[in-house]
Image (tube, rainbow, N blue to C red; front, side, top):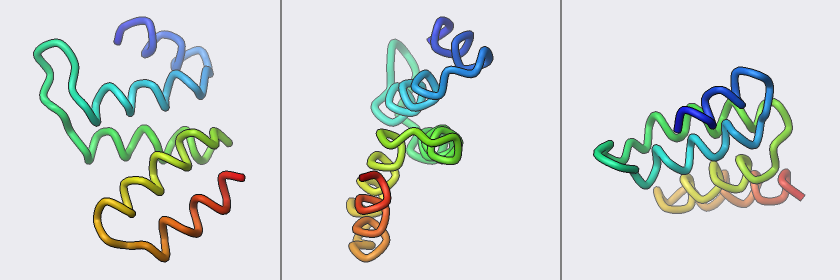
Length: 77
């Protein structure tokens, strides 16, 4: 996680998405946090990371918002 945080601080938007993934699924002794993951995905999305856009779409799909998920998936491509 420390390496991803350092890379994100240096402007690596893929690192923001990877931090989101780690937070979504948990790592080491850190429990998963959907809300924290979503914040990182949204930040990476705003910076143009299409993988983060897909991850946000998956979040909406899991929560039943098919319309928003579809819009995000289309936006990612």
